[in-house]
Image (cartoon, rainbow, N blue to C red; front, side, top):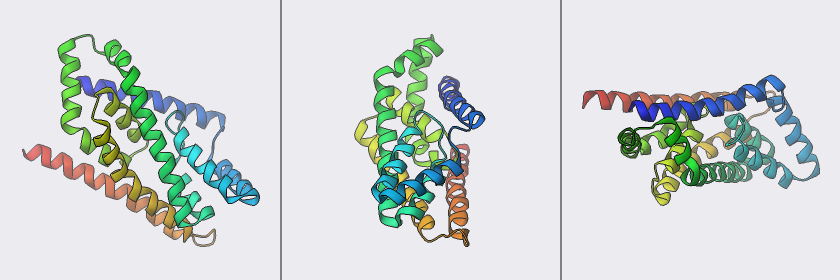
Length: 216
């Protein structure tokens, strides 16, 4: 377990570093995203869809407030196109993270864990519990990208990963987009409740999983 946590922590620190850089430079902020989407909508709604998809895909490489982007996507595009754009972006990020890690992830693992037995243990640990990690990863930022990379590193079957990723991402994107669509600047309550509810749901899932493990 310690070996797996070492890999997860290294990946998480890598993603967190991009968040710190983005935050400190102000390159991407919620206000800038809103302005970009507003400007894109003035030209063509399809541009908004492209921006939403691109931002969610970019979250694999740089820290992006994914839930906020999806809510804003629903606000500017409506529930249907907003959800489709969000799902597309999340899917691209997950699949790309999986395949990049499947191809090159061994370099990181071999660098971090010299002992072959410990490497094998780390892989087996994720293979045993990775499905739950992917399903509940949206409880916190960074973890979804980490889980996708770990799935590739441990060579989880792609069909299995894809199914788990979609089960986790599709309802999340639909709820976030719909809450954005029914929210207004004067009444942002649906978006706020949605953000709180989604986070609480995944955290309750984590606590339940942890409790079940402890009782075994």
